[in-house]
Image 1 (tube, each protein chain N blue to C red):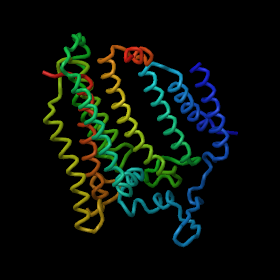
Image 2: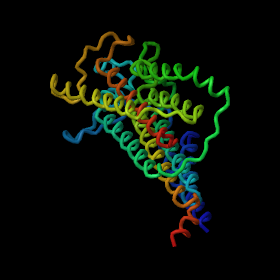
Image 3: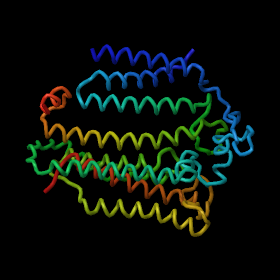
Image 4: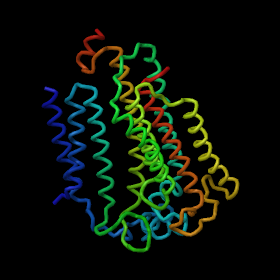
Length: 243
Length: 112
């Protein structure tokens, strides 16, 4: 009964969405031709938001990667909220899993020698790769979030290889708090120096160089450390390994 | 003619909705939610595509770029999706430890 109902609802939604999306053009869009409606002057202007970001983004933020410019600079406050959501999720997972801590854990079999040795060898390189991703966030694809996820995956490898391994919670908390403080501190510094929260107050430098784009690399390194420690905390809570 | 990208992402969303309605295993329901999430992300990205455009990273070799705004928003959406998945999975782990079952029917019977 439920299956038939689900199937009928799914087919109906599919038909409605497919009919709606037939009218949305794919691919051959000219970004400059998006019309932007200005409600103050009640007029349509030609200056579309994506075209503005593509044309002026490098000049206004110093970042070569326009997606990073949008995420960290134009919508930096949004990213702060996003990091907060991740922090809340990590706290929630930790507190939910803490309730079930008291039960006796089932015995975990040891991983074999290949997994143990390989994870020992790869651990450092994976962390290095994650750091590379978030340090170069303003130049190449990637940034703080993928870099942090890569770092957490290296810890997950250790958890899988060594059943008794557990990350020190105090260190994770310190790393996470410092990273969060850096993000907010940079924002407040911008507020004091230039009058806007998260203002890009450092010199932009030469585009495509590592030390460019002002505060964007600083914020992305903070985001990377924060995401890495939070996801490691989630992995730790779900594995449930304690002394 | 509807482009494949829209068709595939709408199909992902619809399969997710079907799983959430029809299945009774909690892990399967969470997988369905994640499929809906992936479908919406794919839909947003493909709306921002520009024919012949490359990734919006300016290095002087290209002049035509895809729309950067959907990509930035999808970056946010992925992170939120991961957070929701982690919370939902931990709640399911707790439910399993309390009731010893992942099937919604059995959990409901146990409550009575």
